[in-house]
Length: 487
Image (cartoon, rainbow, N blue to C red; front, side):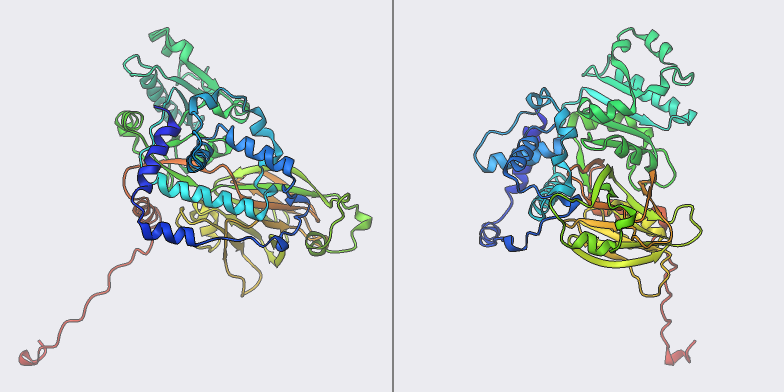
């Protein structure tokens, strides 16, 4: 069975329960975008209304190796009466251009395209939560804490079990290249047990994950939430479904007990999996191109004012896909940072604080929580903005829709530079005039979930790990009995 066809069948079955009245209501509802309001986005938000760019983007979506996008495109084709793409045929295509083509960046999408992309992923996520997705798994990616000897031993156990001839499918297993000569993992002794393991036990590095993510059908992590975040970091675009065994501290995202790994994996490969699509952000560093002697106006005027076609004020300097949060803070500077927030083409506010945390719903229980932000269910399509130790009594956390493009910039008259970090990694300095754009990524994180209600699982996790709303219950009053004199 092919992944797309099986998943699409499940989605169609889920659609089958809709009533006639609901169908009529959807036909009666029409969303109209005001073309007169379609302002040209500035340097970081270049319009893709160019027909040639739009056509290229459409072709890339159809020829993607991301299984999420395959399901979206398959659903669109079925609605139009066209045959869906075959998953196995699609994997034989050249994916390199899909990974490096700049037209796929969500910051380059128009407001309409960004809204349609977000709505499509949202709809698919809702459907996937109620069906089992059967995958044809042949190549498995294993990730663990390479410096933890206990976890390395467990990684060896699971690798040996997957490579065993007793499995119905002869899996190819990739482990981190640092384990090739690790004494605890002992790859040579493992291969000596069965020579066939030698051709199926392979090693990955960061470059392989970056350039050839389509090699992996399924990913397994052994560790805590940090290990899962590292998996998201390794797969910046296309990410395979990730099943995580809880071997860390808290475990908001790691849902499976390693003691039952054989049964868990057997059921997943045989019966299918339930996938939760977690919203990820795409963040791009934008460097100012304005010479110091020409910096006479402020960043607000530069970003929302008129911009000449041949005189772009900023240039992109690297993009990152994150699962938890982007933090722009004061870094090593002893004084507080000064930043300015923009939402689409509008100036929001200036922030005098230690920094600003922009979190996904998944990241709402991380730095966002420590900074006083709201807890947010992971299925909410939102962007959470929270100031870190704001020097004001009136700043409150705000929640924005995932269809906006947010920009956090350092004004030209700021006393010091700021520093940006992405899921706690790749810390970069933002000089006065620089800013970072933040928008919903086209590549959500496919997190494998246990059977049952995702909502109940989330409430259980915050109650278990954070003791959310844990309080001794208030005692009731003892009724006054006049006949006994109140005794």
